[in-house]
Image (tube, rainbow, N blue to C red):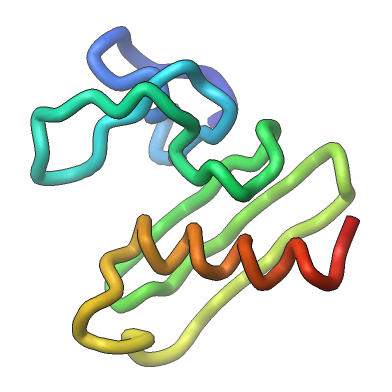
Length: 95
């Protein structure tokens, strides 16, 4: 779960998304982004991201699991941009 599963996308593990890798590709695009998957999240974070913004974030270094359930946050937020916005807000209250 916490290791890259193939060389095509360093930020994809075994059914999980991995932060802290040198580059990331996102579903539906063949573009490689030279940044962490979620720049505002800790490097050791890994995530399961599902339909309608349902996510599970695990951060071993902080002993933290953050889960978001429910309806889609809105029609504009794709899972990765929502994930980044979530971590920008979480960073205001956790260290």
